[in-house]
Figure 1 (spheres, rainbow over the protein chains, first blue to last red):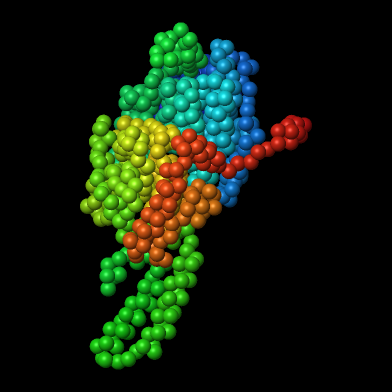
Figure 2: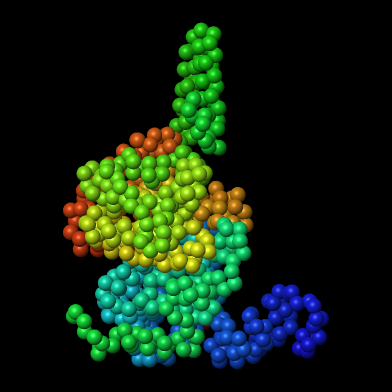
Length: 290
Length: 336
């Protein structure tokens, strides 16, 4: 335990993951990826996986996200019967699906259903980065579209929380691309009905997810420092042969460039969304042309 | 021979060599005033057979090569051959005029339409001007402006897809290329005029889909449409971009594949050796199909048109439905 007090002064460049694996007793302690602080795992969990020292918002599972965001026990999962199929015979897809199902105890990369936030009824979908990068395939497309249609029928606001680094799931070829159009068309119907859509972008949100539902919110909200992109930084670097500026594609960068309404820390997310939705749906507001 | 100046694809080489030999033989015979008809005839028959064999059994990668042929017609070539009174319209009214996304008004078979298409260059000079057909956010916003314009004047929209994708650069991220594409997906799904999409060359991912939502989606025989570039897919799978041919096989990106997957409505025929061999033939086929669908679509009442367009995309996706009961039983078995 005390070994890190005696680290030689000038050898700093080591892989953090290796270091944390060797020096920290498994399970009890974790190290912040950003500020290197050694934290009690329980302390980090109690703080919603946000580093109490530097405020880094670590990635969390969809289940954890729902726990944090919704009223206790209010989430009713739906459309779980919709499952991915390896219809292209794509290398490793079956194996990846099976191992992801085992690892995450989810049936695909999104949880969808109804829930309450501060007693307000909502339709909620949360994608999970730990299930194949939170990628968008036919199953996610169907679950989210079915959820939007349910919201239209039952007059509910829709909240989608993205943690999808990979964007469209290439293992489903063109069909994954079409899911972008499918969900966006659903959101068009929702908009026609005058119902609000809140998009929450968390670390990471990329590719076909960003270029479809994630950017279409009446409210586009992000967590601090969340990595949000269209093209991956390596692709851009490879194309333009330049180093990318610091802070590029972080939530603050997107807000600076007008793509995001506001950034809110994890513990305040629930109340912030509730407050905004309450204002938008307030019955006492100006009646206008109606 | 004009053909000599045209790029010969790898799989065409044996045929090209045979053709060259026949040509040489003919030239030689002419010079020496010999009659070689008896020798030439079987050779020409063999060449014809070879040609049929090659093109009857094209694999995905060979189709990709035809799609990438330098002389393949581009959006403005089709516009020139299909559209009367075309007037190009420029700019997104907000930031710039994206030359990788062209647009304008004109008439097809007497019907006024809005044309929007991704435009690659014919040579290096034009490609630099067109950014190799890779649009920036302002290209998608220009497209949306023109679609709203079409809606206002009740003109059907024809879009043409030919791009490797939206341009991956710093400015694109700054100006929100993801937002621009997303917005188009939503707005195209409910635009109050008919939309016919034609994939004429390369259908590259989100950058293609950004003008790809419509009532009918047509695709030329040797065009491709894919969620990821074949080289990119090969790099992810095998860390080796040279295995792109294998990726092209797996991704099922050809017109035939997409027709079978019900992503497109019709395959438009090209000359056996590709659209570059006969622009007029290809443009005529495409025009005939577009006009055929336009005449059907303009008669459909708007509500139904929009509902059918919604359903078309809403029904896309291949997944299975697991019986909930069986699922519960399985979970119990897993837990036991």
